[in-house]
Image (tube, rainbow, N blue to C red):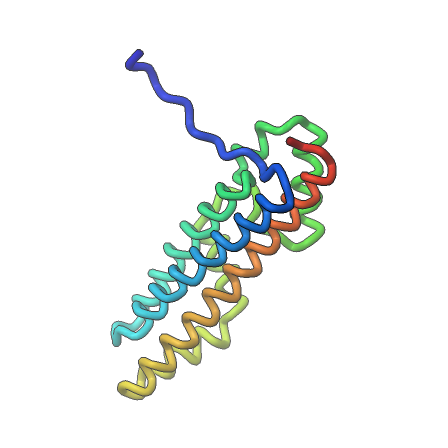
Length: 167
């Protein structure tokens, strides 16, 4: 009583149906966060959108990993052979954010892959109204694309673990 409560660890998805439901729930989360990112990008404050995207994307990755049971802490609770399988599957599909502590540097590198769009967003802010709309649209598309890629990577790793019988 009154002791420290154990964290609520989400288990790995137990079926194809669970994976499909998690995929759709996480894609919906990505769209909501992408819309928020777009709203911030529409504001004519230089640099605010980049700082916001880094924070929002870091939180998004952690939430998606947790939903699929693929945070570093959750993977560490698996039996050794399944831990190895989870990390190998993530590496094999390019899921560099699965099972990792999401740091600002890691998110910045991930977002930098969309660097051309970031430059276009900033340049677009120099043109009033139309530039803000363009910046918001590009922000939404970039954020959604990267988020969806991570959801799919997590779903593939969860599928590999399901097939291997990790539950």
